[in-house]
Structures are given as structure tokens and as C-alpha cells.
Amino acid sequence: MYQNFCFLLSFLFMATSCAFSQEQASLSSKIDQNISIVFLSRTKNTKVLAEIIHDQAGGTLVDLELENPYPQNYRAIVEQVARENETGFLPPLKTKIENMDQIDVIFIGFPTWGMQLPPPIKSFLNQYDLSGKTIVPFNTNGGYGIGKSFETIKQLCPNSKILDGYSTKGGEEIYGILFVMEGEKEKRVRVEVQNWLGKIGLIKHAEN
Picture 1: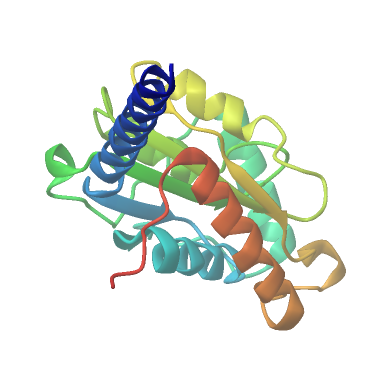
Picture 2: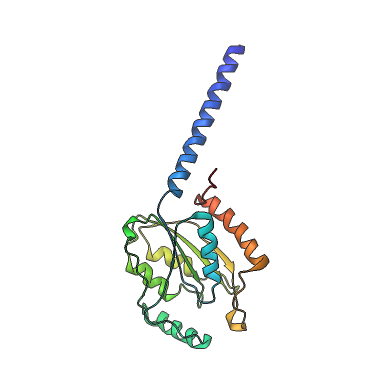
């Protein structure tokens, strides 16, 4: 009886260890893949968020630049983006990614503009064939949330795997509040990002 009990315990231990090893191997295969962190940032909040993700997930940072940059004046850019959304215009991008076929995971970061996905991000998603790639959205906003932006990414990338995204409150440019991703806010976001990346299996482990 005692021998049977010991055998059962040994079997359960081996099965649990095997399952844990398989889970760890699956996670490692994810984080070893080539990662790009593509972002659009106007007031630097999304840029800092991209850098935090880079610190914790690795990969290459890609700052999206336009061939014809948006105006600095807030009201002017609001009006231009509204026209682009109405007409479906996709602003040409200056930024090019030459090795897209070698990238497995793409973080895509942006501010919410008019409760929609910014036109330059639509340009990026239309410019490349992202079939079979893993897409991870992240966002800053003025307090009104992601709007339709994450759903639009799903629509524009029907053959990609879309993971759960992350969003946090950034500046409120309409009220003259621009850069806020510093101090206690930045520390809080670091913790939130760490938890988020852990949940979706894309956090890198510190080397011993």
C-alpha cells in the first residue's frame, strides 16, 4: 500500500514537472521571437510607454514618421485628422521596415484621436502584409478610452493574431496638458505594463 502511494506521488510530481516545463518552453518560444514596437507619438506619452514595453519585452523600437508631418497647432491637427478619417486618406509614411518578413510580434502603439485609430497607424497596417503575425496594441488617451481603435486593428489585420491590448491615460492636449508620463505616473504604468505583459506571455525574464 505504502509503495503504491509513493509511486502515485512520484508519478504526479513527474507529470506536474513535465507540464510546467512545456509551459515554460511555450513562453520562451514566444519571447525569443523577433519583436518590433511600432509607435506614433505626438506629445511623447506614447513614446515613453513604448520604451517601458521595450525595457520589459525587448525588441526594436520603431518611431513612425510621416513624409508630411502634422501641424504643431492642436486645432489644425484635429481638423486635418477629421478630414482624413472622413475621406479615408492614408498619409504616406517616411518610416520603412525592410525586414518585416523576419518579425513575429508587433506591438502597435498610438494615442486615441477623435475616438478612432490615427490615420498613420492605418497607413502602417495597410502598407504591410501582417498575415500570421502576432499584433499587440497599446494606447494612451485623454481620458476617454480607446474608442474604436482596437476594433479597427482587428478589422485591418484579419489574418493576424491580436492579443489583449493595454491602455492608459496620457495628456489632455485640449486643456494644454501635454506630457504626463513621468514621476509616480510613470512608475505606476511600469507596474501595470509588467502585469499585462506577464498575462499575455511576452515579458522577458532577467538573465541570471
